[in-house]
Image 1: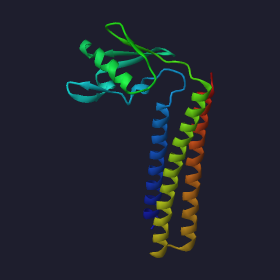
Image 2: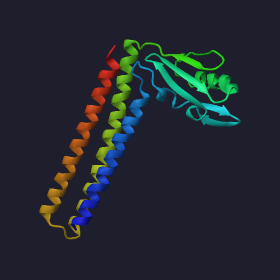
Image 3: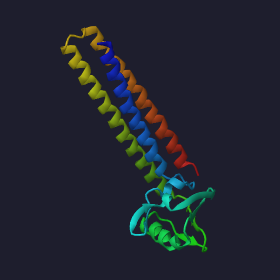
Image 4: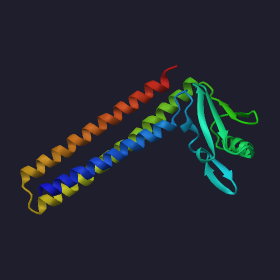
Length: 187
């Protein structure tokens, strides 16, 4: 029985880790005023007839906090990359000098900052739902073991352990989002 309980805990922990990882990945896409290559992550370029992620056809760098530079591996792709950035509707205005595409990142307005904070909190709520779903699945598995002969005390202790795990992951989500909110609201 202990092996099955350990398996349930490990599975719940794995699902909760995935929720946190997804949250961190999504928050990378929320720009906090600083240039970051992940801002162009969703941009796809028409590369010989197939839509390819921009990171697979060019190097993306940040020469300073307000600028992104995109250097295509093939010079003839410059106009395609420029079109793709414009079509992605990110609010960027790319400029090319024949070799490199430069993108100046405009400073965020107060309204836009609040909007980004709302978006971050929405992503956090999605992560919390993922953690709660993992808790629910673990609790159901523990109850099944209880029906199969696991003692009541072990069932209660196991449920308390799952709840403790859930609380720790929820507080991690809160700290991640608070940090992101401070980053967004900092001028």
